[in-house]
Amino acid sequence: MEDSPIGLDKWLTTMWLVASNRNGVSSWELHRAINVTQKTAWFMLHRVRLAMQDELTGGKFGGEVEVDETFIGGKVRNMHKERKRRVQKEGRNEGAKSIVMGMLERKGRVRATVIPDRTKATMQPIVGANVEPGSQIYSDEHGEQWRMDLYEHDMVNHAVAYVNGNVHTNAMENFWSILKRTIGGTYVSVEPYHLFRYTDEQAFRFNNCLPTADADRFSYLVRKIVGKRLTYAELTGKTEVGTSQEEPF
Image (cartoon, rainbow, N blue to C red; front, side):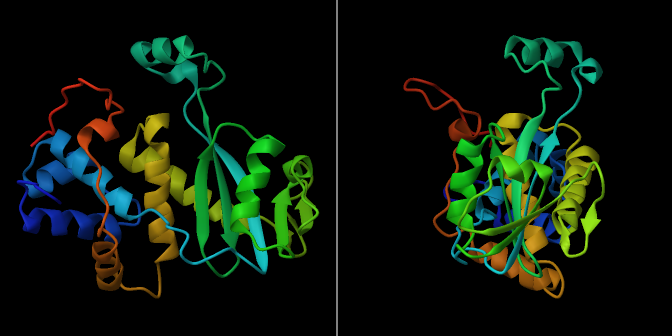
């Protein structure tokens, strides 16, 4: 909120709405609720999402951990012609989908991050940085491609079944369901460039849901804003020297 002409009453209202709404709040809804422009509301929401990022202060996951990936994005044939032209120009013709990787500690927290591909070179370092050696990992059949000797690793083949005793990724599937409902229902369209911010937002609410009350979640979010700064130029990727990009206030 540094140097912001937006009043504290509107900032706190924004943080309350983001923290307490299970499926988030759109910039259009926020601009009507607090009487700012839609562009300003969009910028405010992204700055709140920055505070929602997981700083990994809780250490690595242990015990039983589910690891899964999902694809987020629309089909090219369903896109507006301008967006379709841009996607095809970027060479993302195959559904223009982004990949999100998630890890969930059973009866605990979730972490999710956008990844460029599902190769071993991409996934192994992420798992290694977030899961304690010796932990029990559960994944689908794709886990065979990145299996690591550091972990006990059991897989379920989703072409055959989704549950095999204690081997399943149902908790991660639950998180994916919430994330996709939020993106498709509340935000409607999310650019791949910003997808990680919306993933951070949903992970924050997921990790601080019941029995945490709305007031406690809001208080925690307010405390997390300390030291966080996001300029409009950084948000829009226009940070080159000489770029003039005024903040929408």
